[in-house]
Length: 311
Image 1 (cartoon, rainbow, N blue to C red):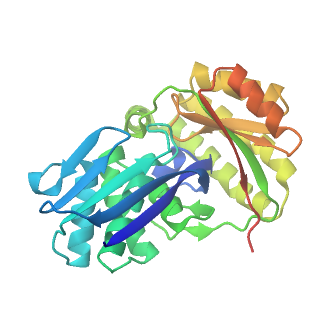
Image 2: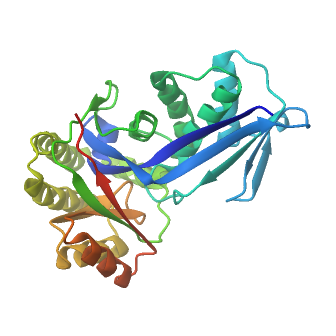
Image 3: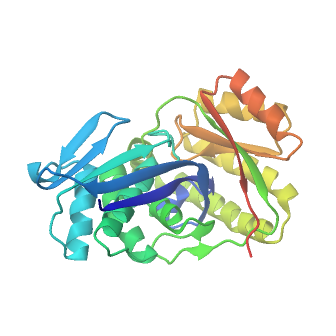
Protein backbone atom coordinates (compact mmCIF):
# COMPACT_ATOMS: atom_id res chain seq x y z
CA UNK A 1 0.00 0.00 0.00
CA UNK A 2 1.32 3.43 -0.93
CA UNK A 3 2.37 5.43 2.10
CA UNK A 4 4.37 8.58 2.73
CA UNK A 5 5.31 10.51 5.87
CA UNK A 6 6.07 14.18 6.37
CA UNK A 7 7.56 15.82 9.46
CA UNK A 8 8.25 19.38 10.57
CA UNK A 9 9.56 20.79 13.87
CA UNK A 10 8.28 23.66 15.93
CA UNK A 11 10.17 26.93 16.11
CA UNK A 12 11.33 29.40 18.73
CA UNK A 13 12.03 33.07 18.08
CA UNK A 14 15.14 34.10 20.01
CA UNK A 15 15.05 37.80 19.11
CA UNK A 16 12.92 40.14 17.03
CA UNK A 17 9.23 39.40 17.67
CA UNK A 18 6.77 41.89 16.18
CA UNK A 19 9.52 44.15 14.84
CA UNK A 20 10.14 41.50 12.17
CA UNK A 21 6.69 42.25 10.70
CA UNK A 22 7.93 45.81 10.03
CA UNK A 23 11.13 44.93 8.20
CA UNK A 24 13.52 44.58 11.13
CA UNK A 25 15.64 41.44 11.58
CA UNK A 26 14.81 38.49 13.78
CA UNK A 27 16.56 35.28 14.79
CA UNK A 28 14.70 31.99 15.09
CA UNK A 29 15.70 28.37 15.60
CA UNK A 30 13.92 25.06 15.01
CA UNK A 31 12.50 23.41 18.12
CA UNK A 32 12.72 19.68 17.48
CA UNK A 33 11.44 18.57 20.89
CA UNK A 34 7.96 19.05 19.42
CA UNK A 35 6.87 18.28 15.87
CA UNK A 36 4.02 17.79 13.44
CA UNK A 37 3.69 14.49 11.58
CA UNK A 38 1.52 13.71 8.55
CA UNK A 39 0.97 10.25 7.07
CA UNK A 40 -0.55 9.86 3.60
CA UNK A 41 -2.02 6.46 2.70
CA UNK A 42 -4.21 4.95 0.02
CA UNK A 43 -7.94 5.05 0.76
CA UNK A 44 -10.97 3.28 -0.66
CA UNK A 45 -13.05 6.46 -0.51
CA UNK A 46 -12.96 8.81 -3.47
CA UNK A 47 -10.93 11.98 -3.11
CA UNK A 48 -8.61 13.26 -0.41
CA UNK A 49 -9.57 13.24 3.27
CA UNK A 50 -7.50 14.96 5.94
CA UNK A 51 -7.98 13.88 9.54
CA UNK A 52 -6.58 15.52 12.65
CA UNK A 53 -7.34 13.22 15.60
CA UNK A 54 -5.81 15.68 18.08
CA UNK A 55 -8.50 18.25 17.29
CA UNK A 56 -11.25 15.84 16.21
CA UNK A 57 -11.40 17.23 12.67
CA UNK A 58 -12.04 15.44 9.40
CA UNK A 59 -11.85 17.47 6.20
CA UNK A 60 -12.86 16.23 2.77
CA UNK A 61 -11.29 18.24 -0.02
CA UNK A 62 -14.35 17.75 -2.22
CA UNK A 63 -16.54 19.58 0.27
CA UNK A 64 -14.89 22.87 -0.79
CA UNK A 65 -14.17 23.78 2.81
CA UNK A 66 -12.09 26.89 3.50
CA UNK A 67 -10.18 25.14 6.28
CA UNK A 68 -6.43 26.05 6.19
CA UNK A 69 -5.46 22.38 5.82
CA UNK A 70 -7.74 22.06 2.79
CA UNK A 71 -6.29 25.27 1.35
CA UNK A 72 -2.79 23.87 1.89
CA UNK A 73 -3.62 20.59 0.13
CA UNK A 74 -5.26 22.36 -2.82
CA UNK A 75 -2.31 24.69 -3.24
CA UNK A 76 0.11 21.76 -3.18
CA UNK A 77 -1.89 19.83 -5.78
CA UNK A 78 -2.12 22.91 -7.98
CA UNK A 79 1.63 23.48 -7.72
CA UNK A 80 2.33 19.83 -8.54
CA UNK A 81 -0.24 19.93 -11.35
CA UNK A 82 -1.63 16.71 -9.90
CA UNK A 83 -5.21 15.42 -9.65
CA UNK A 84 -6.78 14.90 -6.26
CA UNK A 85 -5.75 11.40 -5.12
CA UNK A 86 -7.91 8.80 -3.40
CA UNK A 87 -6.00 9.05 -0.15
CA UNK A 88 -6.20 9.85 3.53
CA UNK A 89 -3.73 12.09 5.33
CA UNK A 90 -3.61 11.78 9.12
CA UNK A 91 -1.99 14.66 10.98
CA UNK A 92 -0.76 14.62 14.55
CA UNK A 93 1.21 17.27 16.39
CA UNK A 94 2.89 17.65 19.75
CA UNK A 95 3.24 21.41 19.20
CA UNK A 96 0.83 23.38 21.41
CA UNK A 97 -1.63 25.43 19.38
CA UNK A 98 -1.65 29.24 19.74
CA UNK A 99 1.57 29.26 21.74
CA UNK A 100 4.10 30.93 19.46
CA UNK A 101 5.88 27.69 18.57
CA UNK A 102 4.94 27.60 14.88
CA UNK A 103 2.18 25.02 15.08
CA UNK A 104 0.32 26.21 11.97
CA UNK A 105 3.42 26.33 9.78
CA UNK A 106 4.66 22.96 10.99
CA UNK A 107 1.35 21.21 10.33
CA UNK A 108 1.18 22.74 6.86
CA UNK A 109 4.76 21.73 6.04
CA UNK A 110 4.25 18.17 7.27
CA UNK A 111 1.04 17.84 5.23
CA UNK A 112 2.69 19.04 2.01
CA UNK A 113 5.72 16.81 2.53
CA UNK A 114 3.49 13.78 3.03
CA UNK A 115 1.25 14.60 0.06
CA UNK A 116 4.10 15.43 -2.32
CA UNK A 117 5.96 12.29 -1.27
CA UNK A 118 2.84 10.19 -1.77
CA UNK A 119 2.52 11.57 -5.30
CA UNK A 120 6.20 10.91 -5.96
CA UNK A 121 7.14 14.57 -6.38
CA UNK A 122 8.95 15.91 -3.27
CA UNK A 123 9.17 19.69 -3.29
CA UNK A 124 12.40 21.67 -2.90
CA UNK A 125 12.60 23.54 0.39
CA UNK A 126 12.29 27.09 -1.05
CA UNK A 127 9.09 26.16 -2.87
CA UNK A 128 7.70 24.35 0.18
CA UNK A 129 8.37 27.40 2.33
CA UNK A 130 6.65 29.73 -0.14
CA UNK A 131 3.55 27.51 -0.24
CA UNK A 132 3.33 27.31 3.55
CA UNK A 133 3.67 31.10 3.71
CA UNK A 134 0.55 31.51 1.59
CA UNK A 135 -1.49 29.52 4.10
CA UNK A 136 0.19 31.30 7.03
CA UNK A 137 -1.77 34.35 5.87
CA UNK A 138 -4.97 32.51 6.82
CA UNK A 139 -3.59 31.85 10.31
CA UNK A 140 -1.95 35.19 11.03
CA UNK A 141 -3.27 37.83 8.64
CA UNK A 142 0.01 39.63 7.94
CA UNK A 143 2.74 37.11 8.80
CA UNK A 144 6.40 38.02 8.58
CA UNK A 145 7.36 34.73 6.95
CA UNK A 146 9.67 33.69 9.75
CA UNK A 147 7.61 30.67 10.88
CA UNK A 148 7.43 28.94 7.52
CA UNK A 149 11.10 29.69 6.83
CA UNK A 150 12.60 28.22 9.99
CA UNK A 151 10.15 25.30 10.08
CA UNK A 152 10.83 24.31 6.45
CA UNK A 153 14.59 24.90 6.40
CA UNK A 154 15.03 23.40 9.90
CA UNK A 155 18.06 25.49 10.78
CA UNK A 156 18.79 28.66 12.78
CA UNK A 157 18.10 31.70 10.62
CA UNK A 158 18.53 35.46 10.52
CA UNK A 159 15.41 36.75 8.83
CA UNK A 160 14.38 40.07 7.32
CA UNK A 161 10.96 40.23 5.68
CA UNK A 162 11.22 40.35 1.91
CA UNK A 163 14.80 39.07 1.82
CA UNK A 164 16.21 35.53 1.59
CA UNK A 165 16.78 34.00 5.02
CA UNK A 166 20.41 33.74 6.07
CA UNK A 167 21.69 30.80 8.11
CA UNK A 168 23.12 31.64 11.52
CA UNK A 169 26.31 29.78 12.38
CA UNK A 170 26.09 28.70 16.01
CA UNK A 171 29.63 28.68 17.41
CA UNK A 172 28.76 27.41 20.90
CA UNK A 173 25.65 25.35 21.78
CA UNK A 174 22.70 27.28 23.22
CA UNK A 175 20.81 25.54 26.01
CA UNK A 176 17.23 26.76 26.30
CA UNK A 177 14.40 26.06 28.72
CA UNK A 178 11.00 26.78 27.16
CA UNK A 179 7.85 27.15 29.22
CA UNK A 180 4.20 27.39 28.20
CA UNK A 181 2.02 29.76 30.24
CA UNK A 182 -1.05 27.76 29.26
CA UNK A 183 -2.68 30.99 28.06
CA UNK A 184 -3.57 30.75 24.35
CA UNK A 185 -1.85 33.40 22.25
CA UNK A 186 -3.29 33.84 18.77
CA UNK A 187 -0.55 35.46 16.69
CA UNK A 188 -3.14 37.08 14.41
CA UNK A 189 -4.66 38.91 17.38
CA UNK A 190 -1.41 40.11 18.95
CA UNK A 191 0.04 41.18 15.59
CA UNK A 192 -3.23 42.94 14.79
CA UNK A 193 -3.25 44.78 18.12
CA UNK A 194 0.31 46.02 17.61
CA UNK A 195 -0.55 47.13 14.08
CA UNK A 196 -3.58 49.07 15.30
CA UNK A 197 -1.51 50.81 17.98
CA UNK A 198 1.29 51.54 15.48
CA UNK A 199 -1.16 53.06 13.00
CA UNK A 200 -2.60 55.30 15.71
CA UNK A 201 0.80 56.45 17.05
CA UNK A 202 3.65 55.27 14.81
CA UNK A 203 6.67 57.16 16.18
CA UNK A 204 7.14 55.33 19.51
CA UNK A 205 6.53 51.99 17.85
CA UNK A 206 9.06 52.70 15.11
CA UNK A 207 11.62 53.44 17.84
CA UNK A 208 10.78 50.16 19.56
CA UNK A 209 11.06 48.26 16.28
CA UNK A 210 14.46 49.87 15.64
CA UNK A 211 15.60 48.97 19.14
CA UNK A 212 14.52 45.36 18.79
CA UNK A 213 16.07 45.09 15.33
CA UNK A 214 19.40 46.38 16.66
CA UNK A 215 19.28 43.80 19.45
CA UNK A 216 18.70 41.00 16.92
CA UNK A 217 21.60 42.21 14.78
CA UNK A 218 23.92 42.27 17.78
CA UNK A 219 22.67 38.84 18.91
CA UNK A 220 23.66 37.32 15.58
CA UNK A 221 27.23 38.52 16.02
CA UNK A 222 27.29 37.22 19.58
CA UNK A 223 25.97 33.78 18.56
CA UNK A 224 28.33 33.44 15.63
CA UNK A 225 31.30 34.49 17.78
CA UNK A 226 30.36 32.03 20.52
CA UNK A 227 29.93 34.74 23.17
CA UNK A 228 27.00 33.03 24.88
CA UNK A 229 27.50 34.98 28.10
CA UNK A 230 26.46 38.16 26.26
CA UNK A 231 23.10 36.78 25.15
CA UNK A 232 21.40 37.07 28.54
CA UNK A 233 21.54 40.89 28.72
CA UNK A 234 20.32 41.10 25.11
CA UNK A 235 17.33 38.91 26.01
CA UNK A 236 16.56 41.23 28.93
CA UNK A 237 16.69 44.27 26.62
CA UNK A 238 14.42 42.56 24.09
CA UNK A 239 11.93 41.61 26.79
CA UNK A 240 11.85 45.17 28.13
CA UNK A 241 11.10 46.52 24.65
CA UNK A 242 8.31 43.95 24.18
CA UNK A 243 6.96 44.88 27.61
CA UNK A 244 6.81 48.54 26.57
CA UNK A 245 5.12 47.47 23.36
CA UNK A 246 2.33 45.95 25.46
CA UNK A 247 2.65 42.31 24.38
CA UNK A 248 3.84 40.77 27.63
CA UNK A 249 1.41 39.52 30.28
CA UNK A 250 1.35 38.77 34.02
CA UNK A 251 1.76 35.06 33.30
CA UNK A 252 4.81 35.67 31.10
CA UNK A 253 6.34 38.07 33.59
CA UNK A 254 5.90 35.55 36.40
CA UNK A 255 7.74 32.87 34.41
CA UNK A 256 10.49 35.28 33.31
CA UNK A 257 11.07 36.28 36.95
CA UNK A 258 11.08 32.66 38.10
CA UNK A 259 13.63 31.68 35.46
CA UNK A 260 15.96 34.55 36.33
CA UNK A 261 15.68 33.82 40.06
CA UNK A 262 16.62 30.19 39.37
CA UNK A 263 19.82 31.14 37.57
CA UNK A 264 18.88 31.84 33.93
CA UNK A 265 21.25 34.38 32.39
CA UNK A 266 18.38 35.75 30.30
CA UNK A 267 14.66 35.19 29.75
CA UNK A 268 11.98 36.65 27.50
CA UNK A 269 8.69 35.88 25.83
CA UNK A 270 8.89 34.09 22.49
CA UNK A 271 6.32 34.63 19.76
CA UNK A 272 3.32 36.90 19.72
CA UNK A 273 3.13 37.33 23.49
CA UNK A 274 0.03 38.01 25.62
CA UNK A 275 0.43 34.41 26.75
CA UNK A 276 2.02 31.54 24.91
CA UNK A 277 5.64 30.71 25.68
CA UNK A 278 8.77 32.16 27.17
CA UNK A 279 12.38 31.06 26.79
CA UNK A 280 15.26 31.09 29.25
CA UNK A 281 18.98 30.78 28.56
CA UNK A 282 20.50 28.09 30.74
CA UNK A 283 23.61 25.97 31.21
CA UNK A 284 23.97 22.25 31.80
CA UNK A 285 24.25 23.05 35.51
CA UNK A 286 21.22 25.36 35.75
CA UNK A 287 18.69 23.97 33.27
CA UNK A 288 17.13 21.44 35.66
CA UNK A 289 16.75 24.01 38.41
CA UNK A 290 15.23 26.51 35.99
CA UNK A 291 12.78 23.93 34.64
CA UNK A 292 11.66 23.06 38.16
CA UNK A 293 11.22 26.72 39.08
CA UNK A 294 9.10 27.32 35.98
CA UNK A 295 6.83 24.41 36.83
CA UNK A 296 6.44 25.73 40.36
CA UNK A 297 5.60 29.17 38.91
CA UNK A 298 2.67 27.72 36.96
CA UNK A 299 4.01 26.64 33.58
CA UNK A 300 1.79 23.95 32.07
CA UNK A 301 4.59 22.53 29.89
CA UNK A 302 8.35 22.86 30.22
CA UNK A 303 10.88 21.65 27.67
CA UNK A 304 14.66 21.66 27.65
CA UNK A 305 16.43 21.83 24.30
CA UNK A 306 19.88 22.52 22.90
CA UNK A 307 20.61 24.45 19.72
CA UNK A 308 23.72 22.59 18.64
CA UNK A 309 26.79 24.19 17.13
CA UNK A 310 26.78 24.28 13.35
CA UNK A 311 29.57 24.09 10.82
